[in-house]
Every structure is written in structure tokens, then in C-alpha cells.
Length: 368
Image (tube, rainbow, N blue to C red):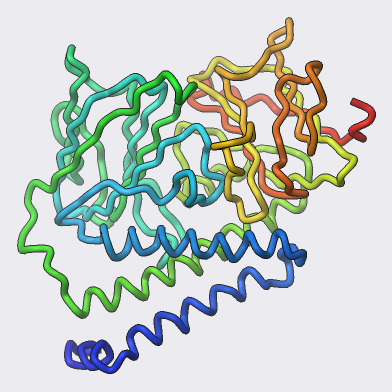
């Protein structure tokens, strides 16, 4: 499409009309034959689309130019994607493998920090293939807590985060044991060899607006498809396909055990971690059907290495139930009015690749 065609579509309003029409099609995913057909889960599905739209516009319109990079969050307290971790502060940035970047910051005291470059996105390829990773334990940090990282497709001395020429985005995970006491790393990024300016360009805006819709549809469809896979082992937590997790933007240092929970009103799910490996951290969380973490601002919907109450033998028992089972089960997770959803257990930097299995069983709540 020529520049003149784009300008005409802007002038006569067709660009906006097409954006609205294409966005409307995302509702077909919520209404799909395999998704829950009750009003509660469907309402959450439509709210999910509004959240994805906010994330898509930030990524593809507001912060889209890799020559003028800025950190933003695709997932936070009210934007949630792909079993987002309640213990995480996520940051994203659009980059271009043809440029070089400098990240400067203060380490803070957050327990785990990882930075990963990716190629692809949910709007186009449906994947976010890893192209480089750097973790906090690998960083050379100054005595005052400051550090500098060079992000480049060419190897650099010092703290270097690799990428490829086709790398186009970066994901930063800051994982807290306790958000109330730990301090997040403070990060800034700049492009070292950018050209031109970031003035609005009509053709680029038209393309980015459509990419925002593609992000909504691509993300929603991807994780509905995943829930279809997980429905084969409801209320169990087997190891997930780790390559699939990595292709979707997962952290290479994390081993994912991911599945689908579903409980009747009088049922509870008991998860027993008989063995806890030597690892940086671990956590378990509940999500809704759309793989959005449940509302961790007000309810206990996750547990981690720091917050868990351990048995005398070092094991951990987690109970998922619609109501509090009492002091006998201190690691109770609240379902917050949901009857089904995604769930995820993470072993983070488990030494010697030790990823113990988890024992899961459903019981009547009265039997607890």
C-alpha cells in the first residue's frame, strides 16, 4: 500500500473503521467451541481482550520504535498474559538486532533478575524465540550496586547480553521472594547508534495499529490452544514441553510444570512437593482459564520458596480450595470465585537440572 493510500484511509476514516472491525473478530476466540460457556468465564474472556489491547497498543504504538527504546510492561497487576508470575515485575522493550544498546542501572535487592532477548512476537510469528540471556549472578556489579550491560549481536567485553540480527524485543524478569522488603532493580536503556527522529509517520502508525489487533488475536488464540493441550491432564502437574515454553518467551533458567485445574464447589486439590531441589527459588500459582494470574493484590493465589510453610521433612503441601481449610493447611491458595483455570509450578535455576515431580490428588473438601 502506497503512502498516498494510507493517507487517504486516514483522511476518510477507513483506517479507524478497519481497526475496530478487526478488533471485533477477537471476540470469536472467547466464543470458541472449546472455551467455557458460562457467563463468568466468558466475561473474564472479554475483559482479557481489553487488557491485551492495552498491552498491544503500548508495545506496537507507544513504545514501538527500537531507535528510541523505553521499558514498558506487557504484564502487570491488571494486564496478564500466559500464566504471568505474581512474584514478578516484568519489563519489556522493543529492540532491533542491527543496533547496539546500553542498559544502566542499580541492582537493588530483588532476589532474581534475568534479561533475555527474543526474536518474534505474538502479533506475527506467535513465538518469542530466545536469542540471548543474562542473569544477575553473571553480572559484574560495582560496589555501589551500579552496573552497565551492552546489548549487541556482536560479542562485547564485560556485561554482554547477546542478541541476533533478527532479535526484536527483550523481556526482563525481576522475581521477588517478598515484594514488601525487596527493592527492584532500577534500569534505563539507550540505543547507541540510532538515526533519525521518532516523529509520527502515517504509514508506520497504520501498520502498528493493525499489529496491535494482531497481538490481541494472536495472544488470545495461543493460550486458548495451550489450555486445550493442558485439558488432557486436568488437576495434574507434569513437566511441560520446555521448548514450547521457551518459544513463547519463557526463561531458560526456569523449568515449567504447567497444567489445568478444575474443581467442583465441594472439592479441593492437594499438591505435594515431596522433594524441594537446591534452586534459586520456586513458586506455584493459580490462574483463570485465560491463563491470567488471579488477583494477587488482594488474595493469596501463589506460594514461593520464601512464603511457604514446610513440613518437618522439608516437603511442602499446597491446597487449592474455594474456602479456607484451616490452620492445618497453611499453604492454602484462594480460587477467588473461579471453578477452573491454568496453574504453574516453576523450579528456578534448579542445580544439576533436578526437577522433582509433584503429587496431585483431588479430594472432597470435607475430607480435609
